[in-house]
Length: 83
Image (cartoon, rainbow, N blue to C red; front, side):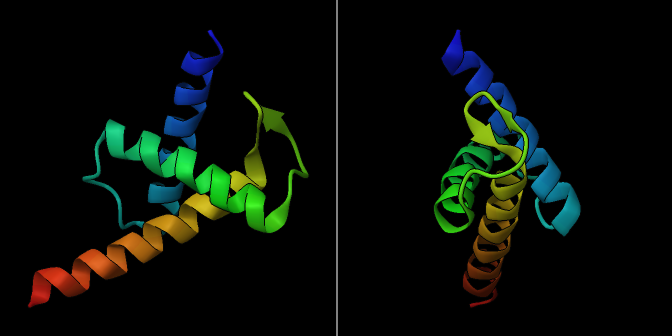
């Protein structure tokens, strides 16, 4: 049951990050889950585990990490698609 909650929270975090950046609108749910989970790992690694927590993920650092991830991925994908 914990894995399902982690996937749901990861999807929400990824969706929030893509909505804030306006760069991940066409990412889809699987990409949102991946961005949310990896973003949570990045955010908690850089900023710690402060703030409210849900499904073992500190929400504010996780959202910040997901925003960072979405921006980096969109820059890399944008540069490779222009070549």
